[in-house]
Length: 483
Ligand code: ADP
Image (cartoon, rainbow, N blue to C red):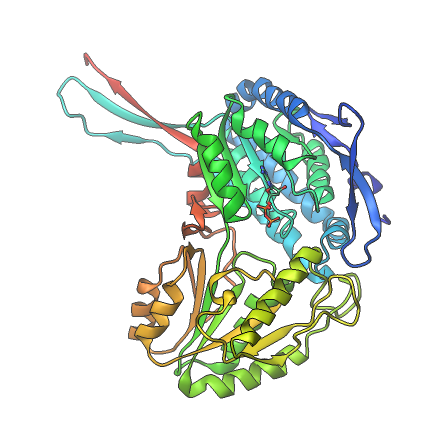
């Protein structure tokens, strides 16, 4: 694996401070999507091991919850520092199992670490409230307490950051956690657990269970000890998990699919819009839930924008993420590639034109050419479904009302972007977009200091910012009488 610190490459699950195999010794192989080479394996655990991890988290809860916020913050802060100290190894591990270019992987490690730093700080600011009483002899206090044992299920597209933005606030609030990482990218999760252990996070506070999604998910949602589930992934699985959580009325935070519109108005700075589109669309090979999925361009600037985007896309370099200068790695697997092909074929059959890419890349495997489709009709599949690949479909629109209607015509409501300079237009459009996040004259919106999350079928709850820790706290009202 060639890491500076070989102990970061862990091939066992982490439960109650111990590195363990599955009960029956079964394993799951993990491959490099760029080379298809097997990197190693992780335990294929199921319900029994998950139950033990939940019990471990329950045992660890009283002592962890009883620490002062400052004490918990100190350990999170140390975990943050360790991520940065090992940024190169963690980035390399991520590129190997996920495929993203090394520069992006390094960026993700810094981003992942930032949630630990932020929530170490927020841990100390879980303020309550005093409320003027409703009777002369009463006093009213509001305190906030950790929810308890939490579960997290995370996806493969951000193998580190999706973990720390759940584990950071959970641990800061005084909760303990059982995490199930995506089976495509478990090594990043296990390396984070190794560093959590070195940071002094006690046994049982953070547990990582690898293996069968359905079995582990079934236990995490079915076990009454778990009081909350935080999930990032597809809307389809999120809906299913939310249903499973209904039995115990568990709290849920869901960060699900998106179908982000990217609207370019005729008063936009076109060069800035192209730069934003490039960052938003092609980052992580288009495999993020906030990637621009539909590009709406106003009539008057349509041709100019398309030409500039074409020129910019021609400069992208597809290849193995470990190679210098590569800006687009492989897609995660063949299924992901097939979906991009289907969306292109469907749009072309309805009259769209391919003006860049359009085919699997000559490198083979799951590499795909960065693609632009022009004159895509509004009824194409790509207008309704998330592509999760390097495909930018261009749609034409006439006026603001049409742009807003098209942008909102989806069940999703995660991120939207638009480029315009007229101030009143900026406010009108920003307020009319039915999304949890709106990027205005920027294609990059992710930061630990702001609330990330969606509305409609894109999810529940917010991650990051001062709001992020609320998802892991319960409000308790104390009514003091007889005063
Ligand atoms: P993606 O399309 O990003 O892979 P998924 O929703 O399929 O999104 O997966 C996100 C996470 O949910 C992964 O960790 C995956 O293993 C897990 N997962 C998939 N199916 C289930 C399930 N039935 N129960 C619990 N977790 C699941």
